[in-house]
Length: 238
Length: 175
Image 1 (cartoon, rainbow over the protein chains, first blue to last red):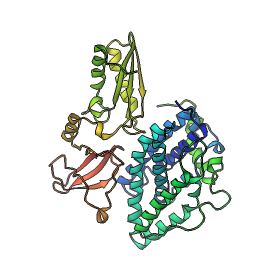
Image 2 (cartoon, one colour; image 1 turned 90 degrees about the vertical axis):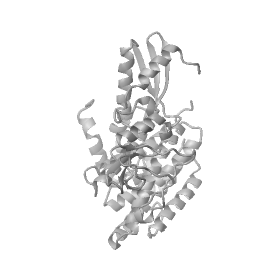
Image 3 (spheres, chains in turn orange, cyan; image 1 turned 30 degrees about the vertical axis):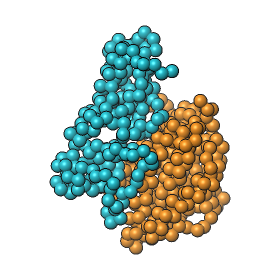
Image 4 (cartoon, rainbow over the protein chains, first blue to last red; image 1 turned 135 degrees about the vertical axis):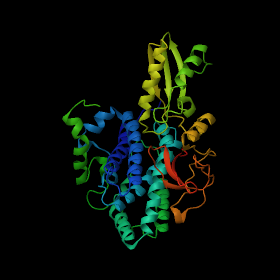
């Protein structure tokens, strides 16, 4: 078996873990019961991926619960707060379109991530489908939903560039990935009567350094909540 | 190394395969298509390969525990259940008998898919193109059904409603 590139497993695993936690925050708060269930199911898929990926890099529980903020390698996009529902959907579209294409490439290659990617790409297709249809409803909905969906797309745009920064050990063609992603996202946004932002895809000093362990302010608070139980009661189980 | 199963392996595999799925107890693990292999590696030592339906499926731990219990009761002292991801499980791995039981239980079985990428063509009501293959209501048999939510009580199911009898029902969605 091919040796596992640890940094690559952490980058992919942390993306899945952190987004899973963010989506889990919606449990009990989503606008409708069906949506509550949908977001929790997507979170569960991502948690399963995170467990498989982090187990390639070490002990999954230690990695999830005992690392400090600076040791996490997730892209900053996935740690962004849920915001209003439009922000969650914008984050879902940007990320699931990326993850589906990324896993598609990984599953076609003969690397250590191929078995998981081949399995997870089918799950992620449903995540992307879910985000796509909400985007169409909200963008092509009322003036209020249109405006808020547009605001969310614009607000999160500057975190998308980082997704295409090559990660050592992740054997994909990053230029092709970016090109296909842009095509997918543009198509959905156009159909939703929205406008894809044109600003830079990385911007302020922080945007785009998550893979190096530099995270945005809300991430620390999220980690505190995620790790609190395990750190306060080591070995707790149910 | 691949070799034909011994009579003991075949017997143990049948026992492990008869374990009911913890979430859909009408189905056995063999009918769900998640039991991949069983090898007797020594006297009283058995290795089982199990594949999850979804990567995050929490039922896999209960399945492993149930298999271990059943095989231990048959005198196998050391039972190891390994989770394998590749080749990825697909709803096409559910047996014909499994599909029949799902429908009987009130869950529309997954459609069988041609090989290739996941076809994703359903839209919100006013954008919706006609689905390629109909999904029938497990209660009244009508093909006039609509999607309510892509995700239902578990990740593997979607929630639909029958427009003929108005009953909501779960559909084991294609993966």
